[in-house]
Image (cartoon, rainbow, N blue to C red; front, side, top):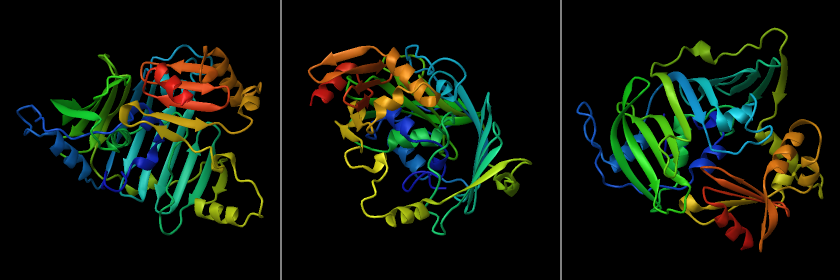
Length: 375
């Protein structure tokens, strides 16, 4: 599979937004040569980047473990308990993955509440949750362009996904070097290090362990500035490059399962096009709600506008809205020439929610968010 250049074959397995927000920035390939273990030939940072871009495997399977400690303050409903969201930001997640080509993939994510599986077998895509024994079936268009983009919250990112986010934009904002050899999941690997040149970033470095034989990223570590342990780690705990048995991608709903059939996006777009004139599109499609990016590289800030009525929804007393409202109420109030709002700060990023409905997020100190909000 071609992991870079087009799109990584494992990209559809996980949400990319989280990885992009946490990692951010781009990279400029340096010329520092890896002081590799004697069993591995020396490779420069630029050579390792080319290796990853040209990586190809016919199949693999393995166990991925994701750990996170973002240094968040205690927030009700967010960093406490056994919720999927809590595990994403302060705990551990694991998943089994199988890959046998662009049209045969599977991930099985484990949690205390059960298992969530996403399976693609040709044009058929299944999403199954053991907690409530429900299954959703989607038939992809024949052109194969409509691929699943994300799994439910709580599913860990793959090392490939995290590496892709880190290397998505190559520019001079990043210093690239190597630290030599490492061992991940029992395999020899080179380690590539990305670090921001701008000291204003809260991120210290991102380390990618690249398999010496296949050039597949086996582990990605994200460090806060001046930290000695990673705030986020996504790594293979076990991996095999043997093509999985075709039966791994065949899904038969269990007895008693509730099965829903989902429309492909192409059909949904056609339905939207047929809507009567004057019909208001969903809030996410309304012009002016699209996020914008201020600045470049590791110190860039994402600015978004919340949909109308968000404050009323956050005030609801039940369900997810109640949890969001509780989190917002627990955040400290801040104000300045830009207005007033609530601030969330951690070791890796800061987030500002203004009372007029703007959200600003970046791997920067709060003062940078205030500056952008004022502008």
